[in-house]
Length: 168
Image 1 (cartoon, rainbow, N blue to C red):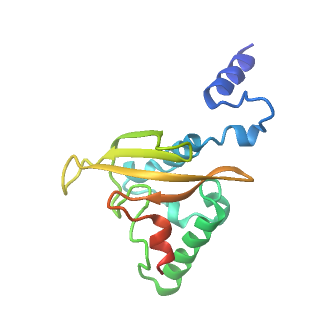
Image 2: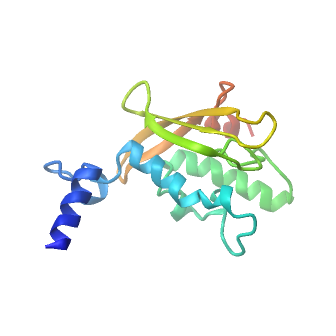
């Protein structure tokens, strides 16, 4: 009985009850993918010393493809190979999901954007400069054979992750 209730609750929560939807694709709504990305990497803003834990940008391809589409994973891997080869910052000098090289966030919200392929993420920085600054990111999503994945991230000043990485 508990398993049935749990399955029904999960089904209703994720929208996996839709007729004809595969279980993998059903739990991969645009908002769910972005929320899972933040759930999986929230430790980056909480733990100062996470021995043995890989930051998002250091993850292998099979992990990155859980969140990002193949073209964006290719660009992220290209930047990582450059960092490994040169032992220096290439294009990304911080985490794109925290819009910082020193992740800091509180009051994170994830909501639908201007259309069904956009997810709006906002959070407040608790550290200067300036204290209380609100960061707003827009995730552009794409439907892939593996379900919804992040195709690009637009930054507050108007740039985007794909544009930044493509300029290498």
